[in-house]
Image (cartoon, rainbow, N blue to C red; front, top):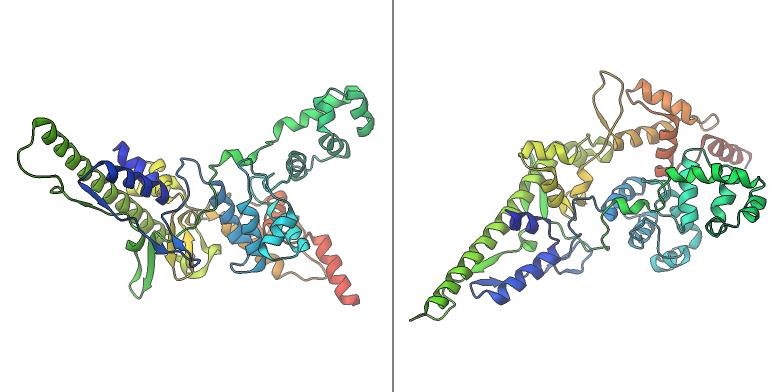
Length: 413
């Protein structure tokens, strides 16, 4: 069972290495690793996300990127470029101009995309430095005073104990510094460490979902499946001593166990994919705004498995659909508060509501975040103003004041 769980959580690349190592030491195992074309046309060589009980940092931000930017757009390509240089801390490890150059875009556009990425959850992600990470978190809670910003910009002075110099910069008394600095205790300097970190892999689809008049069907993508052949007759026949016979029995038993573990891996992945597609069929038909709340625990309960097993089965896995290849993690959506008696709603649906409300507003009198929150409550969403502001940031939509100024400038022009 432990071997089966380990194999279930292995990335395709790690699994290929694991099987190849077993085959080299076991004459009863024959293995030819899969080599199938990936979605981007490159040859897939059994590479996928690292297994972890924690959600992948890359998968977490990719889900938000797919929601905030139109797939195939320049902005989407830029956002993925920034995701590729994310450090385990959640900070980016390359300059804006470097990402712009590698994606063939302008530095200004790259900066604009980074501004939107910095509104993603968890707050502080995609920061370029410790100071920027802390400022993003302070700004979200409306706590970024002039004094706190000055202190964050001069953390080296605080660390060196140069309190009088720091107090002069912050225009305060030395006795005020502990209270100002105390605000930093509630912030996370490395928000990315809450997630598993893996490099940017090439994802081939592990599953294939098809739509017919009878509904959705899900099947394994055999082109990237790992299969072994058991060859019990590869050892020389004839008289053998007891040690040779024991080795042959062990080799054959190990080969059978590995074959069964691989079958269980495929079966668990297929069952998981089938539940996800069944629960989120409307999402596949109509888009992310129609995702319903769904957690690892929900799927685990339906399949009578442990949530960590579902986490292993979905980490780094893709499914090919009529909408393109989609990470299995994209089928999960966090529930957001709703009014009593109202059906549960997903965060994706909430973000879509905010986008729709703003798209239908009168440009001369744009909706404030409070007004959108009120509209949301009328539709069953338990919105707070700050939540609306965060969703605007994800969507790259300016504040009501900025939208009004822009509309006025257009009218004057």
